[in-house]
Image (tube, rainbow, N blue to C red):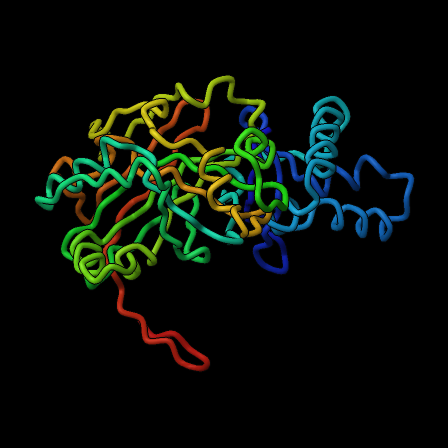
Length: 330
């Protein structure tokens, strides 16, 4: 399945829904459930549809394998029977699959990227990197979806993209063995770990962070692809294009650390939850910092990972905002 969060226009204003894409069509899962159970009263069908397929993706993931199985069954039914439940994907606005994440952790799984960073800073590559799948915790409420603008922060002179793979947790777990960790993954998507590089370099000198260097935005999408759709996660081509020009071209199989290893490490005496996002870190050569090439306002950033789709954003200049009690002045 390719699960999505999307915004649907209604007479009462835009509403966030969850669904699944099949080709160029999008199935609203709650509407499909109500349509399938037309023998119920409309009120009862709506109550059950909302319970099974809430508007919030994290709430849906909390239903675990039971919810996933129900969604698969509903998609199969709707492909032959559903009429009112389908939308053209061009008629809705796709959001980040998780408009908010339960938790965002981003790792350093790719040796080539990590090593290049130490080289650029004139530092020796630490042997400890091979022992610990380290990560930082990001802003789980700053996720932005596909085909949307990302604002250049007004405090940076060096804005950067990072080409990453992400997994999303689908079950509660603690002290999970590596051999069982893959069972906790609900799906995969593309992650763009936008970075204010000059600010990030200042922060990490103080042995904390990054914070303001990262927390302004993280791209996630375009959909959440379930593991059964990906025969070999260790052999996915990863490409970044800036204004149509290929800047980065890598492969997921070049990572040193795997998602099961990351999950096992994080869950040691710590509980992980549905809706937790684990970023892989940047594939080798997958950012402007490694290449010493920098995106500019107005540039179009396109990240593509085989079987996961394409995640597009455009960089826009900052707009000063003064947020008051009842109004926003631009």
